[in-house]
Length: 155
Image (cartoon, rainbow, N blue to C red; front, side):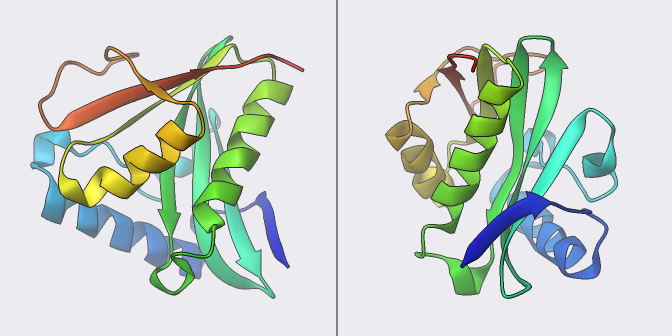
């Protein structure tokens, strides 16, 4: 059974997954368009970080960063290579959305890439109700970025 729980982004297996994530981002997008966070940035107090594990084995991760009282951002969604195609990203995304709603956020936003590499991520977010939006927070228009948001009904 896959379990999603708060975790430490500096934990060795998580650190490795996040390092792979950053390497892929820099290999796919120009450096100025990479907005992924490393393990130390994900340890910030404004960020809640979760992992998905099965029998202790890391399958994926995701984070929620508070921007304002009513607005949060999804960060660092990533699935391990061995876990792809098993619905892990959907489970993590649903968990993050539920947590954001429980915390009273009115909307959650995200930034992802425009390259074909990011097409599965864009489809995942669209399937779960995210729609394209203008840049938010400190982001600016970037031909390598797609901005998406979801309006929430707080619980």
